[in-house]
Image 1 (cartoon, rainbow, N blue to C red):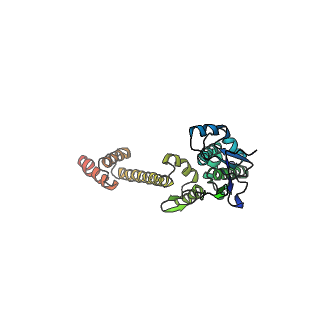
Image 2 (image 1 turned 30 degrees about the vertical axis):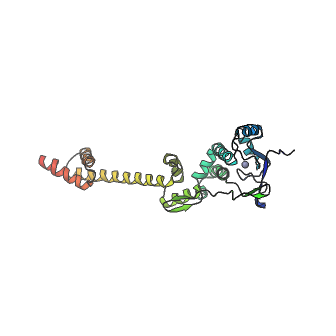
Image 3 (image 1 turned 180 degrees about the vertical axis):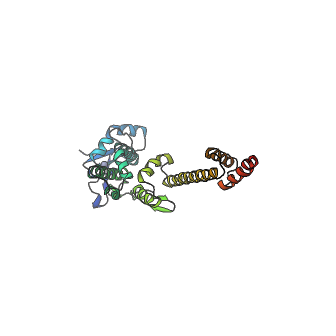
Length: 260
Ligand SMILES: [Zn+2]
């Protein structure tokens, strides 16, 4: 029997019939916002609730078992967190690898990474699904589909995180896996990840150049490499504007020549 306390959410377009409103999979059951067992409590408290019955897949309904929220969008958020956690490993594989790299792997690895990639791609899509336009009691509800904000990296815009990762990895020659691992450290800001990587590379290059210049100088003036490097580093700490060459000149005129 129809539960009169709820109105049914129906897809506006044929393409969305029998589609889970939360994740986009095939819907075989219904979810209730708020859950039927909690309806009375929402009513008594006058708490905000959509009072909607909506198409839902089996997995989403099971994952939503512990969710007592009354608004559909709250329930979606809850569900997406659960989906992301349940498939975290596969989503990680999907974000870290791309299909071109698979070709270079041996058969066994290609097979297992490939399977993870596919599962991860589906899980990632489901965990970011935004619903579809719908009607309730014959009245069309304003466009329910909210496009996720595009991801922007140095003025370039991408519709999905995966697209951004693939492009940035290629353009800046940073492995995708490295990008994904650094994302958490940088508030999921891909631009910050690239900047930090570039800074790190510049620091390493500068360090190598400094060591090389000091070694050469030490040899030329019969000093120990370590003494020259330490002295130059001290000069640079005191005056960050100084170049390595200027620091070496200073070392020569202030310490080495007077002793000679
Ligand atoms: Zn679902």
